[in-house]
Image 1 (spheres, helix red, strand yellow):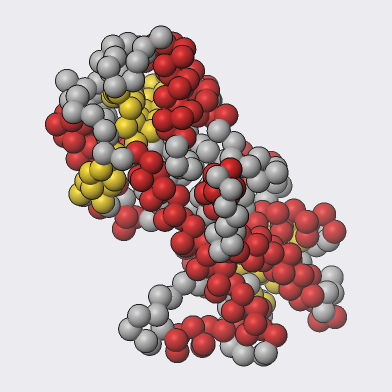
Image 2: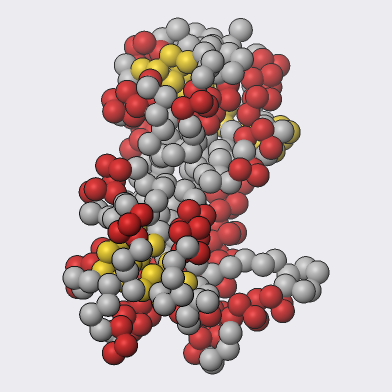
Length: 405
């Protein structure tokens, strides 16, 4: 019988834990003591899950790895960011591999879900586990890879509604593993090759990044030519094989990161990629372009001395995630230079809102003259509809900052 432990209880690990613990007693481990304390109290500060989602679940939370020793099946879902120099930062994976090796025993199975470049699972994680534990992978313990496909804020593609890749080159307890992962997917796609699964995961996000980069570039061209981009997009979308990607500020933990992972391992193998980082270049440039557009707007004479509210600071609609958020960076830069600029984001928890000195009360929300939408959360849409007609509302990707009536 498999006794699971989920390591890393963020946007990926927590939904895995909550799904498994409906039927199986599951350990939830995270090194963040505050995160564990919050989860013990059924409080998800990421606002993805409510208190009721924790009810009647068979969960043991801990930040002490030795209290996870009773587990024999580990699912690792820790962050894999990039450094300031845009190189893969595998420090979390290294640390978790070292921690697991302290309690690793014969017959244990470890599945990694973190997004990596091909080769990391075997060349880094496996190497650390074998070295530290003195056990041999494939004989004493077993490794697999199942790339995460959690999409925060997307209720249509929750775990039970998606297809999931399962890469496992062994026969040991394979039926038990399939049975467990059926709780985490609609359909399982099996492969024995871990490196192929690692590559498949990283290109899923690169494809989206490149396509959004293309739309951002076309958006910029349309602006230069004084053409309404949204009308152009809707017309083009009438063709059967046109995919309607939209321009936007690209943030979060995946798209701004994953292209650098594949580009890095390509360069190590003496191949310089061309297209993979092309999207990154364009998407990274959008922060400056949008900042410049907003600056031009608020410096117009008709808006002099007006109170301005920037709405939505997270990287994505209806998601309380500030990682790599260009919206937040734009807000901080504008706020630094303008005393009449304030920020608002209704889905951030109170502690974070206070940290950035954001407004929070409904009565304060109504006091502004100009509202600029950076991230169009559903709650923001509702609040803006209730405003008086004399307010100016602008959406940064709607008709090139014209008044949104």
